[in-house]
Length: 279
Image (tube, rainbow, N blue to C red; front, side, top):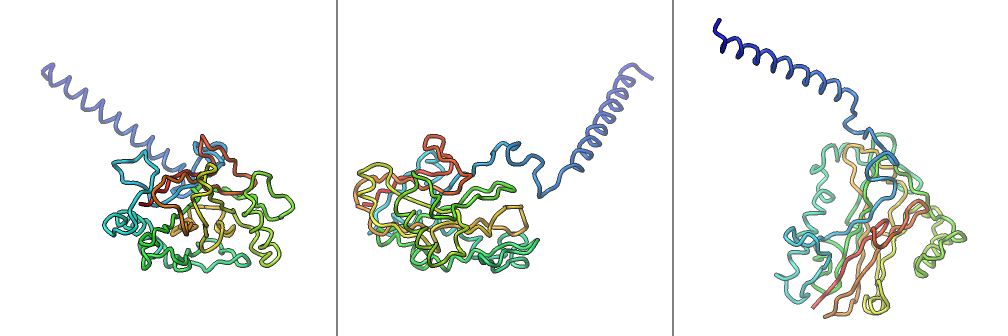
């Protein structure tokens, strides 16, 4: 056999054996993984144990670093990009079949009725007051709705502020009052990850106006822990800015409140920042 043929045969055999070894190693590796359960969880994972807070709608992809929501309330073509973004974001919530497995395993949860094993809680966005598709999420009235979601961390269980006598000193006064009222009238709903939104600075607080939350002021505890069950969708809070001052940038900071959620304005831990400007 010519030398070149021998060399060619050697490399064919060598790379074939090498490819087979890699394939076997990858097969063994994937046998150790569960498609639904991450290998590294909580403190051992890259995202850690402190969930972040996200908001929608987001600015366009060509302005990815911006957190400014800016539009003219009197011009539909101007605010349409924001309402279209919310339509896209909420599509999975409106159409159960959009998410794999969702539809067959939805359970109508309540504080006294958590989901059985393998089922997921429904998120009914029809309860969101003025913050609906049919109402253009109130953008046409210069009183926009912003949607908040808590980032998913596998296995994370919130430690609730469910006793009005043990609320943190830095919690906003209006939220403390809300919790105290719920404790008197709806004690069974106290296992909630509470939410607050307010202006970041004195001028922002004055300009942001009245704020309402739908369907409630927080994320119900029965949605947790997140276990990557098929069809799971994160709960949402719609924040309705009823009368923000127009023609000025308003800095807004929203926070999620649980005993095991730490806040850091600069690291954006447990909170989210965005700006509103309505012409």
